Length: 349
Image (cartoon, rainbow, N blue to C red; front, top):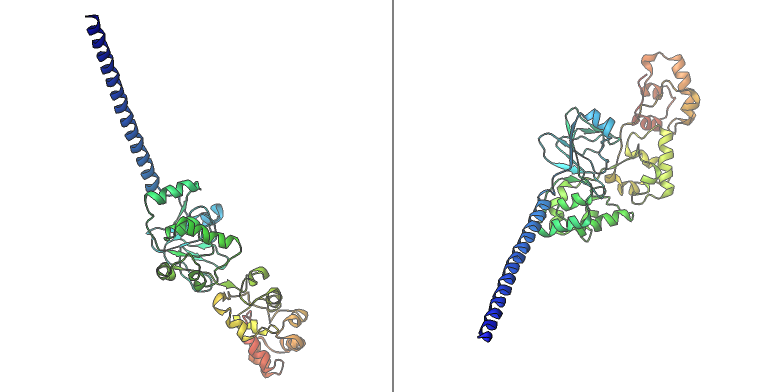
Protein backbone atom coordinates (compact mmCIF):
# COMPACT_ATOMS: atom_id res chain seq x y z
CA UNK A 1 0.00 0.00 0.00
CA UNK A 2 2.75 2.36 0.96
CA UNK A 3 4.73 1.38 -2.12
CA UNK A 4 1.74 2.29 -4.34
CA UNK A 5 1.48 5.73 -2.75
CA UNK A 6 5.21 6.35 -3.27
CA UNK A 7 4.95 5.43 -7.00
CA UNK A 8 1.98 7.72 -7.42
CA UNK A 9 3.90 10.62 -5.83
CA UNK A 10 6.89 9.99 -8.15
CA UNK A 11 4.62 10.06 -11.23
CA UNK A 12 2.94 13.24 -9.99
CA UNK A 13 6.30 14.95 -9.40
CA UNK A 14 7.52 13.88 -12.84
CA UNK A 15 4.41 15.32 -14.50
CA UNK A 16 4.82 18.65 -12.72
CA UNK A 17 8.47 18.92 -13.80
CA UNK A 18 7.51 18.07 -17.37
CA UNK A 19 4.80 20.70 -17.46
CA UNK A 20 7.10 23.33 -15.97
CA UNK A 21 9.79 22.48 -18.49
CA UNK A 22 7.34 22.63 -21.37
CA UNK A 23 6.08 26.05 -20.26
CA UNK A 24 9.65 27.33 -19.93
CA UNK A 25 10.44 26.02 -23.41
CA UNK A 26 7.39 27.76 -24.85
CA UNK A 27 8.41 31.07 -23.25
CA UNK A 28 11.97 30.56 -24.52
CA UNK A 29 10.74 30.00 -28.07
CA UNK A 30 8.42 33.01 -27.83
CA UNK A 31 11.27 35.15 -26.48
CA UNK A 32 13.59 33.96 -29.24
CA UNK A 33 11.03 34.68 -31.97
CA UNK A 34 10.31 38.08 -30.41
CA UNK A 35 14.04 38.89 -30.40
CA UNK A 36 14.33 37.83 -34.05
CA UNK A 37 11.31 39.93 -34.95
CA UNK A 38 12.71 43.00 -33.18
CA UNK A 39 16.10 42.45 -34.81
CA UNK A 40 14.58 42.17 -38.28
CA UNK A 41 12.40 45.21 -37.67
CA UNK A 42 15.38 47.25 -36.45
CA UNK A 43 17.54 46.20 -39.39
CA UNK A 44 14.80 46.99 -41.89
CA UNK A 45 14.30 50.35 -40.24
CA UNK A 46 18.01 51.12 -40.57
CA UNK A 47 17.93 50.08 -44.20
CA UNK A 48 14.79 52.11 -44.90
CA UNK A 49 16.32 55.25 -43.38
CA UNK A 50 19.56 54.97 -45.33
CA UNK A 51 18.69 57.46 -48.04
CA UNK A 52 17.04 60.06 -45.78
CA UNK A 53 19.22 62.94 -44.57
CA UNK A 54 19.27 63.91 -40.91
CA UNK A 55 19.08 67.63 -41.64
CA UNK A 56 17.25 69.58 -44.36
CA UNK A 57 17.28 73.36 -44.79
CA UNK A 58 15.56 75.44 -47.47
CA UNK A 59 17.52 78.66 -47.74
CA UNK A 60 18.09 81.67 -49.92
CA UNK A 61 21.21 81.25 -52.12
CA UNK A 62 22.86 84.36 -50.67
CA UNK A 63 22.23 83.03 -47.15
CA UNK A 64 23.71 79.66 -48.14
CA UNK A 65 26.91 81.35 -49.27
CA UNK A 66 27.16 83.77 -46.37
CA UNK A 67 26.06 81.68 -43.39
CA UNK A 68 26.49 78.05 -44.40
CA UNK A 69 29.41 78.59 -46.75
CA UNK A 70 27.87 76.42 -49.49
CA UNK A 71 30.09 76.07 -52.54
CA UNK A 72 30.66 73.30 -55.06
CA UNK A 73 33.62 72.13 -52.96
CA UNK A 74 31.84 72.15 -49.60
CA UNK A 75 32.37 68.67 -48.08
CA UNK A 76 29.30 66.78 -46.93
CA UNK A 77 26.75 69.40 -47.98
CA UNK A 78 24.09 69.02 -50.65
CA UNK A 79 22.30 71.76 -52.53
CA UNK A 80 19.21 70.85 -54.48
CA UNK A 81 16.97 72.98 -56.67
CA UNK A 82 13.27 72.41 -56.20
CA UNK A 83 12.03 69.84 -58.67
CA UNK A 84 15.11 67.59 -58.47
CA UNK A 85 16.79 66.09 -61.49
CA UNK A 86 20.35 65.31 -62.45
CA UNK A 87 22.89 65.97 -59.78
CA UNK A 88 26.60 66.25 -59.19
CA UNK A 89 28.41 65.14 -56.08
CA UNK A 90 31.00 67.25 -54.37
CA UNK A 91 31.22 65.59 -50.98
CA UNK A 92 34.08 64.43 -48.81
CA UNK A 93 34.88 60.93 -47.61
CA UNK A 94 32.34 60.49 -44.82
CA UNK A 95 29.00 62.17 -45.21
CA UNK A 96 26.69 62.69 -48.12
CA UNK A 97 27.05 65.86 -50.12
CA UNK A 98 25.25 66.16 -53.43
CA UNK A 99 24.57 69.20 -55.57
CA UNK A 100 21.29 68.40 -57.34
CA UNK A 101 19.18 70.14 -59.94
CA UNK A 102 19.50 71.63 -63.41
CA UNK A 103 21.25 74.49 -65.12
CA UNK A 104 24.53 75.27 -63.39
CA UNK A 105 26.82 77.14 -65.70
CA UNK A 106 30.42 77.13 -64.63
CA UNK A 107 32.31 80.35 -65.04
CA UNK A 108 34.60 78.66 -67.58
CA UNK A 109 35.05 75.25 -68.99
CA UNK A 110 31.46 74.88 -70.14
CA UNK A 111 30.13 72.15 -67.84
CA UNK A 112 26.50 72.26 -66.76
CA UNK A 113 25.31 70.79 -63.46
CA UNK A 114 23.98 71.39 -59.96
CA UNK A 115 22.12 74.36 -58.56
CA UNK A 116 22.46 77.96 -59.57
CA UNK A 117 25.55 79.18 -61.37
CA UNK A 118 29.03 78.34 -60.22
CA UNK A 119 31.45 81.18 -60.74
CA UNK A 120 35.17 80.74 -61.28
CA UNK A 121 35.75 80.67 -57.53
CA UNK A 122 33.31 77.74 -57.15
CA UNK A 123 30.58 79.66 -55.31
CA UNK A 124 26.99 78.67 -55.95
CA UNK A 125 25.23 81.58 -57.60
CA UNK A 126 21.49 81.35 -58.13
CA UNK A 127 18.36 83.30 -57.31
CA UNK A 128 16.31 80.17 -56.68
CA UNK A 129 15.83 78.44 -53.31
CA UNK A 130 18.40 75.84 -52.31
CA UNK A 131 17.78 72.71 -50.25
CA UNK A 132 20.73 71.91 -48.02
CA UNK A 133 20.99 68.26 -47.01
CA UNK A 134 23.47 66.68 -44.67
CA UNK A 135 23.70 63.22 -43.10
CA UNK A 136 25.61 62.70 -39.89
CA UNK A 137 28.56 60.32 -39.93
CA UNK A 138 27.65 56.70 -39.19
CA UNK A 139 29.62 53.75 -37.80
CA UNK A 140 31.10 51.45 -40.42
CA UNK A 141 29.19 48.51 -38.92
CA UNK A 142 25.92 50.27 -39.70
CA UNK A 143 26.82 50.58 -43.37
CA UNK A 144 27.76 46.90 -43.48
CA UNK A 145 24.40 45.93 -41.94
CA UNK A 146 22.54 47.99 -44.49
CA UNK A 147 24.43 46.49 -47.42
CA UNK A 148 23.78 42.94 -46.23
CA UNK A 149 20.05 43.21 -45.67
CA UNK A 150 18.98 45.51 -48.46
CA UNK A 151 21.21 46.23 -51.45
CA UNK A 152 21.29 49.95 -52.17
CA UNK A 153 19.25 51.19 -55.10
CA UNK A 154 21.72 52.20 -57.83
CA UNK A 155 21.56 55.87 -58.83
CA UNK A 156 23.18 57.92 -61.59
CA UNK A 157 24.05 61.58 -61.04
CA UNK A 158 26.82 64.00 -61.95
CA UNK A 159 29.92 63.61 -59.78
CA UNK A 160 33.60 64.47 -59.61
CA UNK A 161 35.56 61.26 -58.88
CA UNK A 162 38.22 63.33 -57.12
CA UNK A 163 35.85 64.67 -54.46
CA UNK A 164 32.76 62.41 -54.37
CA UNK A 165 32.11 60.94 -50.92
CA UNK A 166 32.31 57.26 -50.02
CA UNK A 167 28.57 57.18 -49.38
CA UNK A 168 27.79 58.76 -52.74
CA UNK A 169 30.07 56.25 -54.45
CA UNK A 170 27.87 53.56 -52.90
CA UNK A 171 24.79 55.35 -54.22
CA UNK A 172 26.43 55.19 -57.66
CA UNK A 173 26.58 51.40 -57.39
CA UNK A 174 29.94 50.65 -55.77
CA UNK A 175 30.23 48.38 -52.75
CA UNK A 176 31.58 49.78 -49.49
CA UNK A 177 34.96 48.12 -50.09
CA UNK A 178 35.15 49.46 -53.65
CA UNK A 179 34.23 52.98 -52.52
CA UNK A 180 36.84 52.85 -49.75
CA UNK A 181 39.43 51.63 -52.26
CA UNK A 182 38.78 54.66 -54.48
CA UNK A 183 38.94 56.96 -51.46
CA UNK A 184 42.21 55.32 -50.30
CA UNK A 185 43.72 55.97 -53.74
CA UNK A 186 42.81 59.66 -53.45
CA UNK A 187 44.14 59.95 -49.90
CA UNK A 188 47.49 58.59 -51.12
CA UNK A 189 47.71 61.46 -53.60
CA UNK A 190 46.04 59.76 -56.58
CA UNK A 191 44.03 61.93 -58.93
CA UNK A 192 41.65 61.25 -61.81
CA UNK A 193 42.60 63.83 -64.45
CA UNK A 194 40.39 62.43 -67.19
CA UNK A 195 37.36 60.17 -67.40
CA UNK A 196 39.60 57.46 -68.83
CA UNK A 197 41.69 57.53 -65.62
CA UNK A 198 38.60 56.58 -63.64
CA UNK A 199 37.83 53.80 -66.11
CA UNK A 200 41.28 52.29 -65.51
CA UNK A 201 40.67 51.89 -61.77
CA UNK A 202 40.60 48.17 -61.00
CA UNK A 203 37.38 48.50 -58.95
CA UNK A 204 35.47 50.15 -61.82
CA UNK A 205 33.92 47.46 -64.02
CA UNK A 206 33.44 48.21 -67.72
CA UNK A 207 29.65 47.97 -67.40
CA UNK A 208 29.67 50.41 -64.45
CA UNK A 209 31.88 52.88 -66.33
CA UNK A 210 29.63 52.75 -69.41
CA UNK A 211 26.67 53.71 -67.23
CA UNK A 212 28.50 56.45 -65.32
CA UNK A 213 30.64 57.95 -68.10
CA UNK A 214 28.04 60.61 -69.10
CA UNK A 215 27.81 61.73 -65.45
CA UNK A 216 31.53 62.10 -64.71
CA UNK A 217 32.37 65.78 -64.29
CA UNK A 218 36.03 66.62 -63.67
CA UNK A 219 36.40 70.43 -63.57
CA UNK A 220 39.18 71.85 -65.70
CA UNK A 221 42.05 73.72 -64.06
CA UNK A 222 41.68 77.48 -64.55
CA UNK A 223 45.11 78.80 -65.56
CA UNK A 224 44.17 82.24 -64.23
CA UNK A 225 43.41 80.94 -60.73
CA UNK A 226 45.62 77.91 -60.18
CA UNK A 227 48.75 78.13 -58.06
CA UNK A 228 52.04 76.39 -58.85
CA UNK A 229 51.08 73.34 -56.75
CA UNK A 230 47.91 72.88 -58.81
CA UNK A 231 49.87 73.22 -62.07
CA UNK A 232 52.19 70.38 -61.03
CA UNK A 233 49.19 68.01 -61.03
CA UNK A 234 49.00 68.38 -64.81
CA UNK A 235 50.82 65.73 -66.85
CA UNK A 236 54.22 66.88 -68.08
CA UNK A 237 54.23 70.00 -65.89
CA UNK A 238 56.87 69.88 -63.21
CA UNK A 239 57.93 72.50 -60.68
CA UNK A 240 59.92 74.47 -63.27
CA UNK A 241 57.07 74.99 -65.73
CA UNK A 242 54.54 75.42 -62.92
CA UNK A 243 56.57 78.33 -61.55
CA UNK A 244 56.96 79.82 -65.03
CA UNK A 245 53.22 79.57 -65.69
CA UNK A 246 52.50 81.56 -62.53
CA UNK A 247 55.21 84.19 -63.07
CA UNK A 248 54.29 84.71 -66.75
CA UNK A 249 50.64 85.12 -65.78
CA UNK A 250 51.69 87.91 -63.43
CA UNK A 251 53.66 89.63 -66.20
CA UNK A 252 50.70 89.45 -68.60
CA UNK A 253 48.21 90.60 -66.00
CA UNK A 254 46.31 87.35 -66.58
CA UNK A 255 46.09 84.90 -69.46
CA UNK A 256 43.60 85.80 -72.18
CA UNK A 257 43.82 82.38 -73.87
CA UNK A 258 45.58 79.07 -73.26
CA UNK A 259 47.76 79.60 -76.35
CA UNK A 260 49.70 82.25 -74.43
CA UNK A 261 51.37 79.40 -72.56
CA UNK A 262 53.36 78.82 -75.75
CA UNK A 263 55.19 82.10 -75.07
CA UNK A 264 56.93 80.43 -72.12
CA UNK A 265 60.44 79.24 -72.92
CA UNK A 266 60.45 75.58 -74.07
CA UNK A 267 56.70 75.29 -73.59
CA UNK A 268 55.90 73.78 -76.99
CA UNK A 269 52.75 72.69 -78.81
CA UNK A 270 53.27 69.07 -77.74
CA UNK A 271 53.21 70.05 -74.07
CA UNK A 272 50.12 72.20 -74.58
CA UNK A 273 48.25 69.47 -76.46
CA UNK A 274 48.92 67.12 -73.54
CA UNK A 275 46.99 69.34 -71.14
CA UNK A 276 44.61 71.27 -73.40
CA UNK A 277 41.59 69.16 -72.39
CA UNK A 278 42.46 69.60 -68.70
CA UNK A 279 42.68 73.39 -68.50
CA UNK A 280 40.47 76.41 -69.03
CA UNK A 281 41.04 80.16 -69.09
CA UNK A 282 38.70 82.55 -67.31
CA UNK A 283 38.51 86.18 -68.38
CA UNK A 284 41.27 88.24 -66.79
CA UNK A 285 40.92 91.81 -65.62
CA UNK A 286 41.35 94.24 -68.56
CA UNK A 287 44.97 95.37 -68.85
CA UNK A 288 45.33 99.21 -68.69
CA UNK A 289 47.29 99.79 -71.91
CA UNK A 290 45.94 103.33 -72.31
CA UNK A 291 46.42 104.50 -68.72
CA UNK A 292 49.50 102.62 -67.47
CA UNK A 293 52.69 104.52 -66.82
CA UNK A 294 55.85 103.93 -68.81
CA UNK A 295 57.40 101.63 -66.17
CA UNK A 296 54.28 99.43 -66.05
CA UNK A 297 54.12 99.34 -69.85
CA UNK A 298 57.75 98.27 -69.99
CA UNK A 299 57.04 95.35 -67.66
CA UNK A 300 54.53 93.79 -70.08
CA UNK A 301 56.20 91.04 -72.16
CA UNK A 302 54.46 92.13 -75.38
CA UNK A 303 55.52 95.78 -75.09
CA UNK A 304 59.00 96.07 -73.53
CA UNK A 305 60.90 98.55 -75.75
CA UNK A 306 57.77 100.15 -77.16
CA UNK A 307 56.65 101.60 -73.82
CA UNK A 308 58.07 105.10 -74.42
CA UNK A 309 56.58 105.23 -77.92
CA UNK A 310 53.12 104.37 -76.53
CA UNK A 311 53.38 107.16 -73.96
CA UNK A 312 54.33 109.67 -76.70
CA UNK A 313 51.52 108.40 -78.93
CA UNK A 314 48.97 108.92 -76.16
CA UNK A 315 50.36 112.40 -75.54
CA UNK A 316 50.21 113.71 -79.11
CA UNK A 317 47.31 111.78 -80.67
CA UNK A 318 43.63 112.44 -79.99
CA UNK A 319 41.80 109.79 -77.94
CA UNK A 320 39.74 108.60 -80.91
CA UNK A 321 42.98 107.34 -82.49
CA UNK A 322 44.00 105.31 -79.43
CA UNK A 323 43.77 101.89 -81.03
CA UNK A 324 46.14 99.00 -81.59
CA UNK A 325 45.84 99.62 -85.32
CA UNK A 326 46.85 103.24 -84.76
CA UNK A 327 49.93 102.16 -82.76
CA UNK A 328 50.87 99.71 -85.51
CA UNK A 329 50.33 102.16 -88.35
CA UNK A 330 52.40 104.77 -86.49
CA UNK A 331 55.27 102.30 -86.22
CA UNK A 332 55.08 102.13 -82.43
CA UNK A 333 54.18 98.42 -82.47
CA UNK A 334 55.59 95.76 -84.75
CA UNK A 335 53.26 93.37 -86.55
CA UNK A 336 54.16 90.65 -84.04
CA UNK A 337 53.42 92.94 -81.08
CA UNK A 338 50.14 93.95 -82.68
CA UNK A 339 49.06 90.31 -83.05
CA UNK A 340 50.13 89.47 -79.50
CA UNK A 341 48.27 92.40 -77.95
CA UNK A 342 45.23 91.73 -80.15
CA UNK A 343 44.53 88.52 -78.25
CA UNK A 344 44.84 90.25 -74.87
CA UNK A 345 41.89 91.67 -72.99
CA UNK A 346 42.63 95.38 -72.83
CA UNK A 347 40.80 98.15 -71.00
CA UNK A 348 38.96 100.65 -73.16
CA UNK A 349 40.76 103.97 -73.86
